Image (cartoon, rainbow, N blue to C red):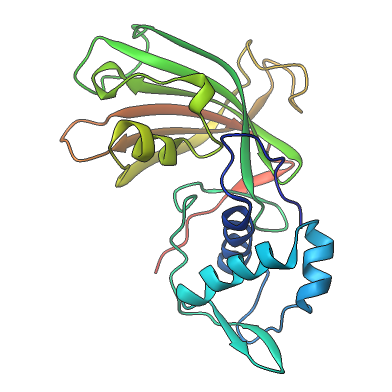
Length: 236
């Protein structure tokens, strides 16, 4: 297990640990009834304090995903809620799970390009390009367009979770999304550290996202390395 580096806008560390464990439970890497390692060993493996780990475990307990038995240990319990900050992030490592994080490549506000599909209510939008990771593995590049009428984005306030930023700074929450998954060539703007060269055919996701209005407030494009990650949609 690996945690993301801490920055001023990172998710709180205990939330990162909770999110990582939730994704491992959803992916089947942690099974119902499985006993977690002793807390001291887990904290050492994750490079965090026992206090931070216990806050993460308390969050899982509240969600019904963990049973803490005094004198025995902590046990995974299926059937609780796996809804989380990253509930709509559908990419996982080939082995399952992985904590999502992102490096911002650039942010620019301007007129929406003519090649974009229609979304939102403004002729302008904010474009965000990011390099995506799961744990420490680079798995994707993405381009997100937020409709101009939905608010202004400040780079210095962005965290790894863009949806959390929308809620905290712009006052809305993404409530549903529609994905279209296919293949497409890596864009020319992909940075050198991405695992595939521009022009290479890889996995591709187009997403429209809605808040509380009839029109989508966001349109995004994600190019992901199928040698490192896959797209997962679980139905309940």
